[in-house]
Image 1 (cartoon, helix red, strand yellow):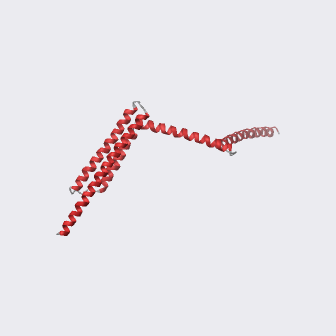
Image 2: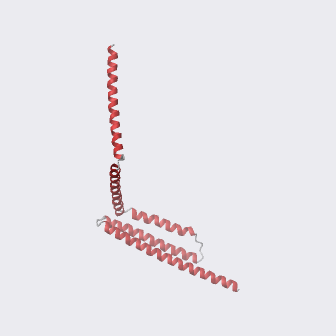
Image 3: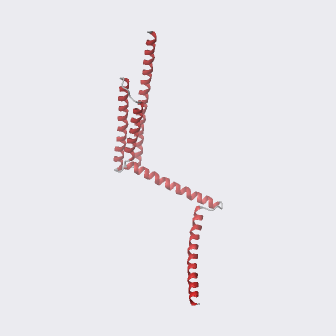
Length: 182
């Protein structure tokens, strides 16, 4: 009897510790989600003040709502498990994966997100062009052949081949004409 009582106490302590850890993780998750929405709101607010912003905020709000619904589903399934229902662990994973996919779709389908990505890509391309120009200048100053030099040589070779082919055709016509006269 004492042994079974000890097992029940250990089980209760384990469940209590597990519940505390779950609630802490849930609270941390909600705090992280709130910080995510706040940081996106700040970033979007700094980015633009046009009508695309309202569409962007709506997308972020939908994403946030999805995260809150997922948290609610997690609590419900956890309660179901605590009440004795057999809940597969993969169900918890699937809730978060599906929610993440849908939330990212909500965010990435907004015009504000597209504008920010477009601006970022433009900035990256501009930076890459500046880096390429700087490396070309550095190579030239060190006396090395640059990409531009190789492209120029290639263009000149193509032109020389074109001219050579034209000269060969003229020579062939002259030879054909001389042969016809003989």
